[in-house]
Length: 424
View 1 (cartoon, rainbow, N blue to C red):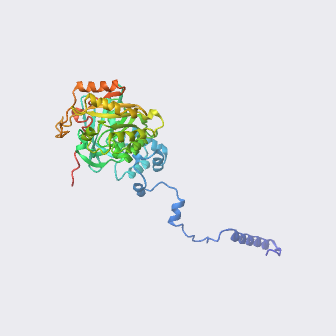
View 2: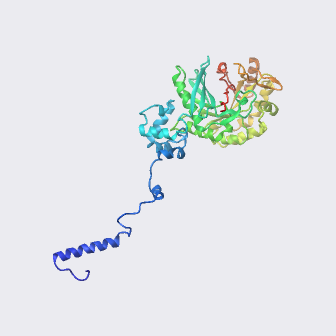
View 3: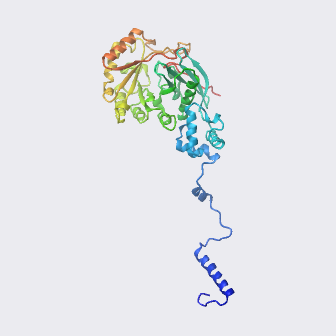
């Protein structure tokens, strides 16, 4: 065939066709042409790039309220849809309750991703308002437990602060705090914390004359330092410029300081820091915070080390809170001890002392009584409060006196508490 030239037109045509067939068999792979073996499911998983199926969503995705825009964009089919969702949440709107905004397919995907829970993980059950404009809202969690959050408007500076909870109950046992009387039920998930902020935004927008919600403080039910992982995720969502878009200086995380190392955990977050000290004197602090296991000096040293993690002195600005109780820690000697105690902290950053007059947790007939073997706790006199703050100012301290806000509705500092979920 190859060496004998074919003769005649028909013969040559057949010869050339035969050559082409032979060459094609030599060049093409030896895989059978007919009835090819289908690719295995394993191979298909490697070569196929699609969004998770509806059945896979509940196990392959995190809750949308703690999911980045990029991750959420993959789920919903585009970053634009993810940005649209967060834009609605910033306005306090639940995208699942607003049809035709995300599109039917994206809305169904979002709904399926939270089918074990709700998109907003807390449901507002009751809102109460004090004469000063402070609003406390009771929220139910998916498991039936209840938490409280508080909106505190400041008309003078045209801003509103939201106080969020981080736990159902608390195990720190502070004797002057209603939440401490509950004991710890459980930690909140990060989406349950963010959900409080979304509801707070909506309540502030719906309340005529209330300034925009600009600040969030982690000072509600529970101790943020005892739920660090969830708090860190929620802070990330609040301060992310593509999600809740809050400034780091507008988000404050507070802790009693169960351990010196907890301050480092908080210092790594994009937030301001606050320490609920209450007294620099170990014996008095132990009376006020029975769960204390470290000396105040040990805790302070841990705080100083944590602040030094932050390179900018501006981000080391922090708050030290003291709840003053009549005859216990409201004396001139207490103020002098406090001024001396915070000097090492002042050496590395700016310190604001937050003076909080004790709020009577039984003022509204809750049946709770704060006190210890020394007697029932009472609010200091105005004269004692004035002397206390004057001493601190003379010692060069920056002081702010916390005015009772919402105490008429048990919404003031130390007055938040809910009933445990009834057991079946």
